[in-house]
Image (cartoon, rainbow, N blue to C red):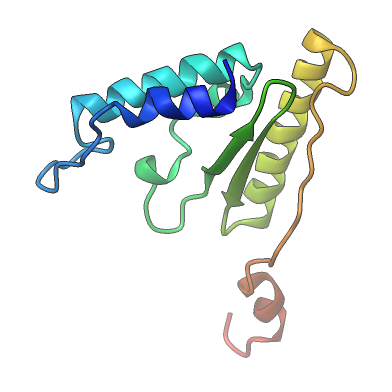
Length: 139
């Protein structure tokens, strides 16, 4: 299926949200679209979204708990790319999350052939408390 054909199959699904709902997705039709997207992602070989800890997403965390947040999915017949924000206020937990992503990359490359999955980790900023704490008068 070509990219425009996929898009046309999505836009016919009525996915208006229910502003009074307390869940996300907020309607059955949004769940239907999500299930279609998951199925197509798996067909395209994008398995790693289902390999992450399901309880470590923004909707399942609060306060200072870390998470993996899927922000972008792109693809065509030959390639697929997904982007995440990985967040944790604790440096050791953050490093653990990065290692989880590296293990997923390794697993998928072993399954589908070396070079199939390429992980790029770009650190944007660190939790500033790690830098400030050594200089605080009262710890």
